[in-house]
Amino acid sequence: MQAAHPSRNPEHMKPLLIIANTPSPNTQTLRSAVADGARSAAIEPVVCTPFEADAAHVRRAGAIILGTTENFGYMSGALKDFFERIYYPCLEETQGLSMALYVKAGNDGQGAKTSVDRIVTGLRWNAVQEPLILSGDFQATFTAQCYELGAGMAEGLKMGIF
Ligand SMILES: Cc1cc2nc3c(=O)[nH]c(=O)nc-3n(C[C@H](O)[C@H](O)[C@H](O)COP(=O)(O)O)c2cc1C
Image (cartoon, rainbow, N blue to C red):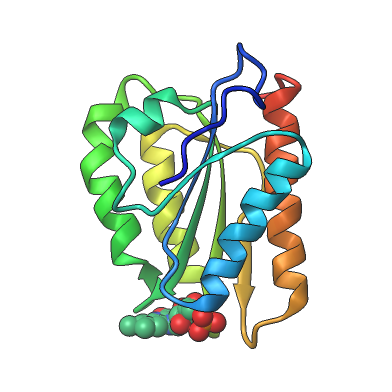
């Protein structure tokens, strides 16, 4: 896991947390693009897999970007494991947390989106933009969209919008 770099982030700012499973080269590319987008806004994010992330990461975060593959019409098992571990430990303390979601799917993505939406609603996190659903044959635009997602969330966090 990559730690936040204190010299790059404004002192008062809570970190941007990027949690995404990366079972393939394409999904690694997408998560890297999200992180690079944040860096383009001079923010060093904390980047980890769902298995590495715990409730303490979430409590410390200023905003979260979640990334998941769609598997069997649902979010990845890795992200579901994350939610199962953090749901009750975070429920009271993280309401209103700004978040965004991207889904990498083979040909659909709606099931993953809906499954994450339901849990995020339960946690009362605040989705600051529509989920990004990246479906079908891999395209360069997917990478660009993930970069923009990271940049936008980092800018919002830096400017204190979230
Ligand atoms: C076990 C398994 C189940 C999957 N189920 C779905 C699914 O329900 N819907 C879908 O659109 N893609 C599904 N996929 C495709 C994955 O979402 C896709 O492999 C993932 O986004 C990685 O994309 P890549 O092959 O471009 O790296 C599944 C893949 C696996 C391995």
